[in-house]
Image (cartoon, rainbow, N blue to C red; front, side):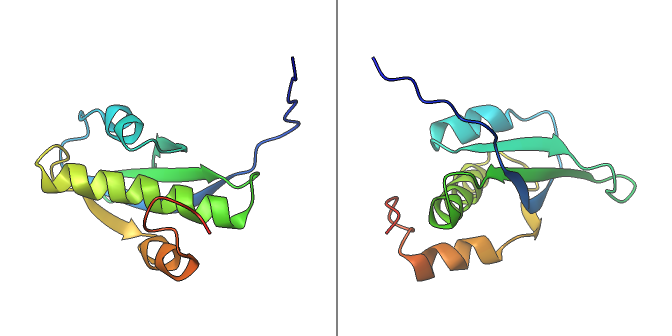
Length: 111
């Protein structure tokens, strides 16, 4: 049996999103998209807005992180298109969707 010891994670902010209905199950949406990310409330949102920060673990490398960012943001957009995430919009970080295309990650396979 082989045990892999991961000494540290390198979670970095890649996007801020907005939702009208913050009670939606983001974790369920992200799990369905096989995403490797963390979502946390953003304390700097304007009054009356619900903003969330999206973080990705960069420890596997930049290409893998770009793929993870693309996967997470794409899964949220698809859920919003189906009416599952009301008022979803990317406040900042949309460039990760474009970067994944440049790196060849948009088909679900990095590289």
